[in-house]
Structures are given as C-alpha cells and as structure tokens.
Image (cartoon, rainbow, N blue to C red; front, top):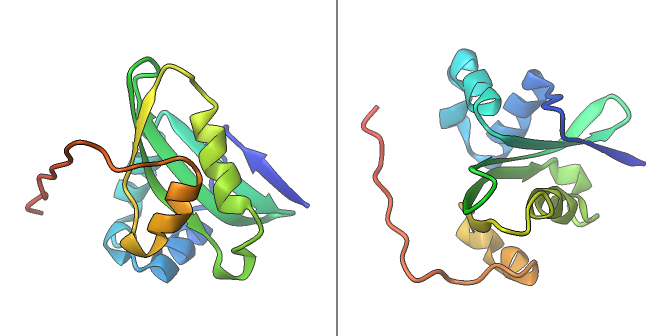
Length: 130
C-alpha cells in the first residue's frame, strides 16, 4: 500500500536516484542545492512503499493566486498505478483559489491533460546562466 506525506519527508538519496532516472541530473550534482530546492517549496508531496520513497512532487505557491508544480517523478517500477495522479491531485487540492502552472516533459503531456491541465495563453522562460 502506498502512503503519501505532505510534511517534507524526503529521502534525498532516493530523490537523487529518481531525478537521475528522469534525466534531471542537473539537479543532483549539488546535494545542498537540492535540499534547498525542497525546503523552499511550499508544498512537497512524497509517495512511499513502506520505507522506500517511490514518488515526489513539489510546488511553489502563494496559496491564493498562483502555484507552479515542478519535478513530478515516480519510480519507473511504480508507474501506471495512479501515484503521479495522486501526487498532483494532492497539490491541486491544497487550494481551490490557485491557478497552477506545471513544468513537465512533452512526453507526459497527455497525462497532464488527462488531469485537467490545458494550454495557457503565454509561457516564457528565462534560463539561468549557471
């Protein structure tokens, strides 16, 4: 049985593994920066199979207008069991006032659309230089 936590309970070694598996190794080169990313996120949801963290999602938000969902990841052995959907829905259910943006992979676009996400009117990014 999968158990979900919203108290920033994170196994950082597993998070490293999950991020690397997803191709996000740019986020795992500096453990201090990774921990700061998690701690500075207002909402962090994790999924656990007993003592093993198998899913992670985070959101930065003001809780009243805007939220940005980032880094939704599920262990490849646990995918297609509703874990990603639950992680996202737990974030979406945290406030009915917030308009959420989601940064995700194009390969997962249909999954996000199935949860109610749609194209926004404009999205621009400013890529960090370092």
